[in-house]
Image (cartoon, rainbow, N blue to C red; front, side):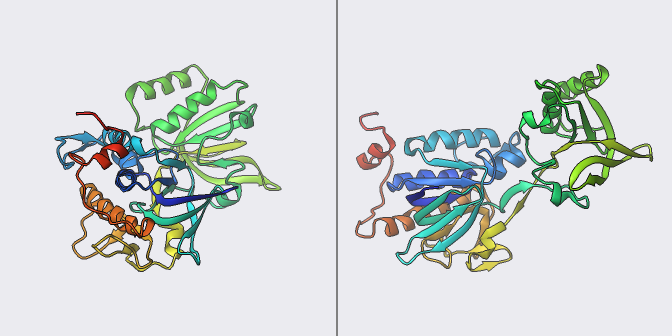
Length: 347
């Protein structure tokens, strides 16, 4: 794939990453944003999308979803390029002071600056902790939705108790061409999803379109590496062997620091050490903002991350535009900022 040359790459599309893109835009620095999740929002969207947030300045209450939606609207004038569903696997300093970055999907960047806004780490699916699971991943064990064509005429097991698991199981029953069978399994007959969705699932079970299995998967049964069946410890205490071709697991997500830990940046308790002048890490040109960083007095609050992103953008301007004097300007009065925001001539 072609090398993308840019002034800035932001790792993390959560609230601080999005606001970092906005602050870079005010410095006339365009950027690319990379995130492991398939959508923007990060921890804010994943963990408290519907929960109220009361400490965003000037807004009495926001849900996580509302905050992310408005941050996306705010950064829109600068049109950051999103690269979702991929990890930044490598970040290597170059002789000219830039950084070469490679992602898990093969994207390559050559950037003057890098901003790590990865929160508590890249969110990744929790794995199925059953012996032999790793060998089946991507072929017969999936942590995201596989191609529906691959499921035609096959026995499918969906594991999980949330809305994603239930919605996926129901969608499989409606696929054309259809799977041979679809089973939804959870260790308890209790589901964390809207009542109407749970009722739709139970209606599908009653009509015979969907099987419901209460229990836990304990073993894979394969033949020359091909999944044949699984062993399930049912809630009744019996052990069941169920013929199976594919497993789709929705076990939640967990944050992992991932490859960042190998980038030779100064760290303390799995957090990146930064200064408080511009939130640079121990490597000039690499900044860390939000929950991923640490410094004396650090507080893990979104609004603190916004402050860090603002000063980091000024630090980046000194690198991207080394011969430019970067004065402090105000969006209330600066015609230069109005031009960047696309609001010139507006009251």
